[in-house]
Image (cartoon, rainbow, N blue to C red; front, side):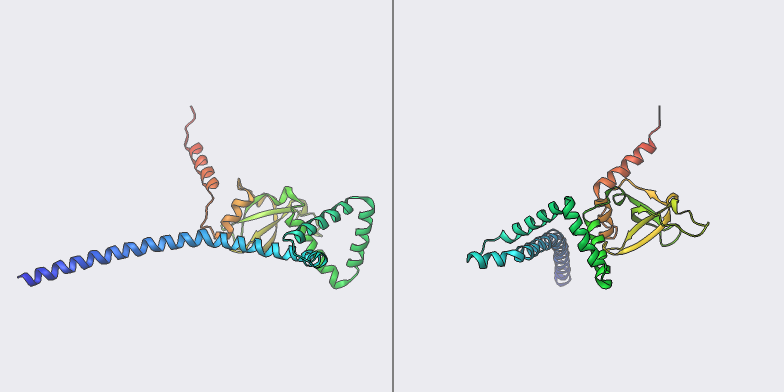
Length: 237
């Protein structure tokens, strides 16, 4: 009778060992994923910042190092910034605006260059948020079908005249709907204003949701939802 009892004890011991190993693997997996989520964005950000520093510092840094005989880290970046500042100062006065208008007119006279220049200029205007008021609005629209909602950003009122009585252009707006997980691409919707639902989200919170595919729900959004639930459930006295 001792042999079956010993086998039973051995089986229980092995079962406990395997369970502990499984728990240990789960813990290690959790730590591994946590480490990836913490370090990968940090490392990518540092790498991009280093790459941009090397790129901007290399514009004028090489010429300066050749002129004085040794390299000064950051000098190229400083001179590049000063170059942009001087260009901005020139563009703000009357003579500078006339010169820039002449250069822009020359560029727009060349067919291929005109399309390239206008596209880059429009992207730059969006990046620096030249049109801040409307681009900051985060909305929800029914897309791509009815009863299916998506996040979008109102960019402007649609003011292009339309030769049709079916659509009132004064009641339309342009909405940019970003794609997941790459919000730099997306779709442009021209939609009636009364079919647009405004939200309480800011653009950063909306981008977090878009980039994560809905996995990341910013804390401020959750708090606002909870507060709204509490307000709705409160019985007025």
